[in-house]
Image (cartoon, rainbow, N blue to C red; front, side, top):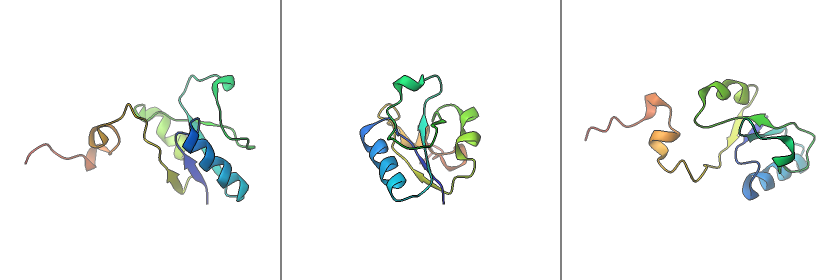
Length: 96
């Protein structure tokens, strides 16, 4: 079982990543593309960070390759969950 942890550079995500590492559960922490490695505050693990951006579909396939579970920390800037996070086929039509 491999877990993908979003928000891995923040307080919650880095703690989850550290706990998974401590429990010997394979996990990858995500970072936005373009961050230099000195900006990444990932928990001390032997796993390299994975490039992922909620708003950039070109990063999705690579980030989820081999992943079975997701720990999702929604970025505060993505406050409209149906619009920003749900896949297009799951979004409400807006008709009511």
